[in-house]
Length: 404
Image (cartoon, rainbow, N blue to C red; front, side, top):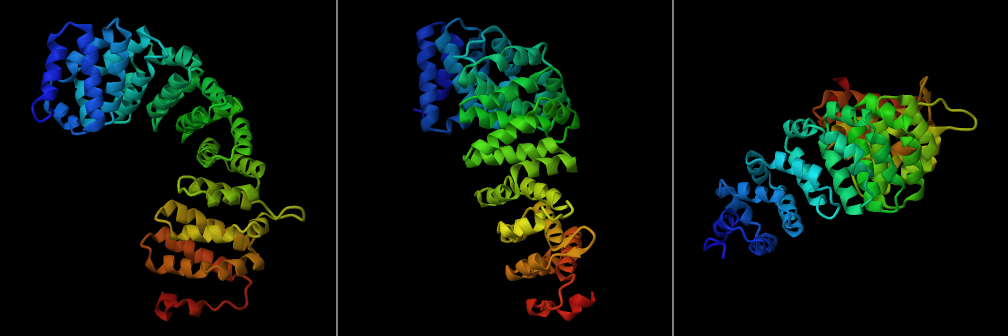
């Protein structure tokens, strides 16, 4: 059917027909064909006028047509080339107008999914949609206060993409009360909604001190920590850790407070989750906690050792993520040698026992990043401090390298 001109024929129907039943059948045919044959994307890209006739149906009074069109646009917009073609033919104005006019929880979610795909293409589209007259107030004052699950999921996914790495839009939403409504989704019973809410909170607050302050004022840290205590779902745990880290920003005291509330043993247990996404956040938070001076009641480096955390941290030295390697090296320095150059022989011995020295030497000799080389040398010095017998030469360090 595709080989014999199905797609141009369907586009011709959208252009010429005025029959509602025909439109419904055509959309169903196109959706079913799309599920079976992704090459339809290529056929639609070839047709320069594919979407103009479809977008006129955003003004249709037939709910079934508008619903089917939304599903089609959401699916097609995952292809950037098709999405760009839609934009060129008037997609953004058509969708923002429909979202304002229609407001039906049964119809609108697909259109938010489509817009989420569109704003992921470029910051230009983030700004264009955010600056559309009265669109952000509509999102905050209406859609964030709707209690339909599918709609809420789509709106929060859209917000996440809309604010991602865009400080201006992050501030606009936060200053106009979006944070309170997004945080409210954390108390729902839906794990999916909790997940997308956490991801939206992270996108809003990342590298933005102003939004971080607003979120913390709205008790975001307490709500996230409470949810982390209750959940055993790995994906939620990962998202919460990364979001807590994002909201802490550059504040060492805030990171230490969060780490203390979670506890060393639980923090170490998160290293066993099969994901790389949270490892930098986890290691950085642990590092801040380890900077605390040891006392009779609390010695964080030794507690990390007792919780079998040192082998997990050594494992990070093999990561391709250079920021993660740097964070792990700095943590190993603190575990080996507390502030004030007080050596911790028990931790030093554990690092040696789990081949930490071998990995650190390999970083010094083979990694081109000079900062990693310097931190690795510092880590090696910290491990050696106060130790009277470490057979470094068994780790095959050449004399020439040592002289260098």
